[in-house]
Image (cartoon, protein in one colour):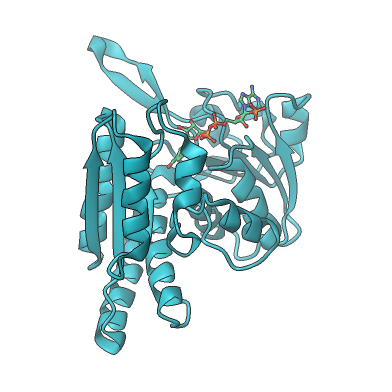
Length: 293
Ligand code: NDP
């Protein structure tokens, strides 16, 4: 048996199309143009690529896109002043500060300065706490994407055994909370967990968010399980080029799993699409409109 490959590219493009249609509707019915502000500090090439892609997709969805590029040596107070200005700006409904920030800046202080109502990355402690409490919250985009991809395979996650490998604030922890909200039974694994293969063996849903190339092997996976690979690892390839691999040994897992996301073309595609979803949701909430479907 070969696993079904979950087409993140297709699912993300369908999601972006749905968001664009909703943006047309709220513009027409409510005169509301959702706006996303992205703040980039420094000139890290990978961050620049992400910011360009966010800008393009925000505009394509019919939203306003505001880009703020600051030098790597910006003073923390100047960055905080920009965030305060964006918090007050009625044209801005979502604020995203591209991470990682230069070491001279205190990431927690910067994230805490964002108005939780505009925190479309879902990293403010207020949103993280609300999510953990089972209340409505803006949730981090990558875990949201993981849930949508899983639901393209399983109409309901209720009662399924899930394992989340990785417990970062960005991916693992919020993913655990979203899975609990979907009534899955969740095991959380991390670098101190014992016998990962055994923990994985009983999981119907495997989420790998570790940052270790091909760590999850095919023989860890229960036959027929759904495997969602969050990892993005760049490895050297022939002729000085590089190639991307996930945290799962794809070819091995493909032979055992029921469904699996590829890298690239899986979870990564969903992250920006979910950012657009969060921006639309934030805009509607700020204007007292019902949450979009
Ligand atoms: P972090 O480095 O913040 O967290 C990694 C987690 O993996 C930690 O909880 C760590 O455990 C755990 N871990 C490390 N080694 C092991 C091990 N040997 N066994 C079990 N657990 C281990 O990474 P992120 O969560 O930010 O990202 C994870 C991966 O996802 C990366 O490859 C990243 O590039 C990718 N990513 C992809 C995105 C996308 O859009 N597709 C978006 C964000 C991230 P401990 O807590 O004990 O240290």
